[in-house]
Picture 1 (tube, rainbow, N blue to C red):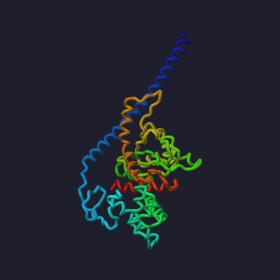
Picture 2 (cartoon, rainbow, N blue to C red):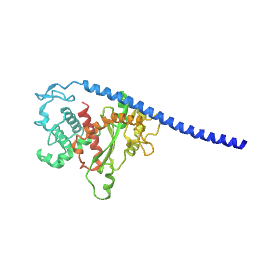
Picture 3 (tube, helix red, strand yellow):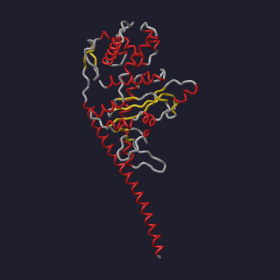
Length: 350
């Protein structure tokens, strides 16, 4: 009788231990879902505040550019000398005069530093030619023929200005600290594929993206809450996964050092395994055995709304039609993307 009673007690204890383990697991899942919903609630509040500020913005008033009445966009200033720009600049090149002036001043300082006394065209004209080639993806031979210079000269100008702009691109740690200093709480992370020409032989396999079903180079970008690009990674083969690129660039460590959180899509699941205090929020995944709960679906929808501005940042970057299909050497693609990042911020943030 004592042995039978002892066996019953042992069996019951084993059942209770198993039940305790299941309840502890459920409690951890509930706490994780509650934390996700809290983050989603804060993100939704910030998005609502941003929408309210955008609705309250005032329509730009007419101004004067080069003595002519035009409708100014917020980052364009009046009093610009039209002599520095070609005729019908506003119609032919949809860029602000402040961007052209900034790049022309940058080129003038560079020419003074290297003591270059003479160029076949003035810096303002060189700037417009290079910006037209980048914005409209025009063939360098066509641009050169229209300005009575050689194709190699235009190519040299383009590479020179790209190098000057790429040197101004911010580093990841400094960009995140700047966001935190300005009162930001979260950053947005995502990856994109820039199409390229197919290469011959085995070298082309590395750029084949099975997800996007075409060849290209993979880039990782970080934006602030409003979708303004603050950093872009180096170019990697198109088959690179988002989480692999993030680990290579130590995204998680930089976010912790800056005291910021981040919103990312499900491609970054597993990058941050800290359940109690996650830095990178990626939402919930579903499997055949475990479907998403209503709370998890709601959290995913709210996080998708919070992540929407990062797509706007990519859209502004890809307005430069030279990214339609890269024809440059992949080794120079990093400098090109970082130069376009600087130009995009000049256009969008002024």
